[in-house]
Length: 112
Length: 109
View 1 (cartoon, rainbow over the protein chains, first blue to last red):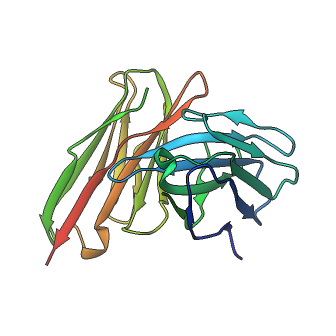
View 2 (view 1 turned 90 degrees about the vertical axis):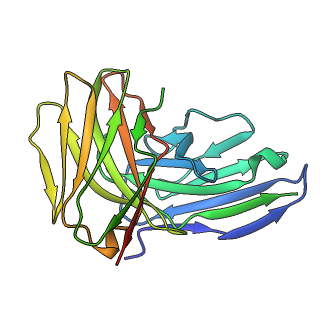
View 3 (view 1 turned 90 degrees about the horizontal axis):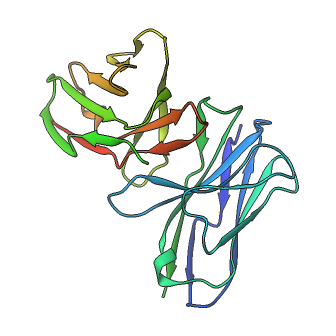
């Protein structure tokens, strides 16, 4: 049982480049989330989804886009990367709102 | 608005106890607690629901004071494996959830 899988695990981008982070879950969860975690800080919600085909903005959505075309996948896109987007990105999923969230292992992104 | 955790950091010897607090200015429906070890993903510990009882997980327990919008995490007889950063996540009646900035716990032999 893989749980929540994120790819890639590490990535270095140049300013202005674009990329997509993939999150896949095999628990049939409805809710999926993308967070960023900066050094010494907590998790900040970027975008989330409450089901296939739905997306919504979180606390810090600017500069990011998401898509949930399939229930098991949640994609996070950076259209034009900026150094301020250097962070560790975590994907999570949960059965419903206010239930236990399962996190992926994170993607460490550096924008130079 | 994110919850405030205190203390920011605590250092213990094995066997000692610790309390981590999480306070919100918003009316809360529930509080979640997670632990994150360095370089790893956060792992769920427990949920405290409004009107619910105090929860326990091995020697880690928590309470939720609805009147004060505050939750406390109690770590009893700490073990080396308890080291990590503890985050509270608060859920409001309006359906918003946010995480605190974490409390780093270091347990030394």
